[in-house]
Amino acid sequence: MQKIAASLRLIRFQNLLIIALTQYFIRFAFTKTFLPFPALSNLEFSLFVFTTILITAAGYIINDIYDVETDRINKKSKLIIGVHFQAKTAIIWYSVFNLVALALGVYLAILIGKPLYSLIFVYCIFFLWRYSKTIKRAFLIGNIHVAILTALVLINTALFDIIPNIHFPGNESGGMILKIILVYALFSFLLTLIREFVKDIEDKEGDSAINSHTLAIVLGIKKTKIIVFSLSFLVVGIVGFWQYFQLQIISLNNIKWDGEIYESVLIWGTDKYAIIYTAILQTILLFFILKLYISKTKTDFYYLSQLCKIIMLLGICSIPFFTYFYLQ
Image (cartoon, rainbow, N blue to C red):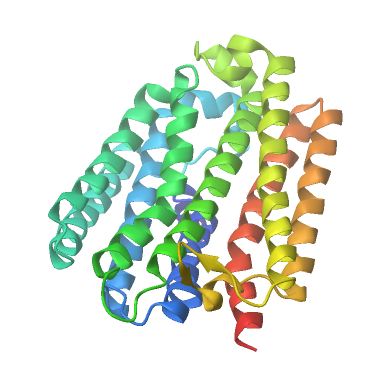
């Protein structure tokens, strides 16, 4: 049982579950509601999700392999490599996961008639290795790329399941769906960037010991907190814009977008329950900002890091929530 528990911790099973739910929510709770002809069948889409999971799990494995020394300082009680698994065993799993994922990625890209899309998986695999080896210790670059990879979880879903068939008769709402997915991707990008900077503050002691050049080390904790404040208010602004949009939609019967009426898509997420949900999310964001202001200890910043994950999960869960009440 200890081996199984350690394996699940190594691949960050909870994070993988969130990623899988995100892609399934977009597919079954959003895309298929408005798009009669997605590019992938249900089985093919499951293979796509599995590919994403394998690449992400491999990324976590290689990260832990390179982070052994840092984790001895920052997370000694949670150390896995060298305690539950030897590095050689972890490298074998890392290689198998990536090879299977790459094969599936190439197959899916060819299947939808977009073979160049397979390069997205190559980029993800290469970057996760490079990030763990050197980039994560560099100033800012690693943080931004991790945020980009998080946004790609949503964007890739659109690239593989929506864009190939976007001009099919009956798929007229595809353009509007893409815009909404991009808003969610931006939300994920910013929240991930915020969490990365918060983790830099949390791990400053261990990162200093291995001569990393994270934001918290280069600029100091005070300036890093100011940047996190700024990004947090930007997220609040995005959610605030959505709240304004909700109220505007409620006050109108039909909305024209680029000369065509997309009423069914536009009223998604604008009922009273969606407004309440969005208000709760906004309240938690404001609580995060307040908590950031008073945070001083390593434990405080760990709490903020976990709160970021909760906010991101709530954001993603808004997709099935909005769709459920839209269909009522």
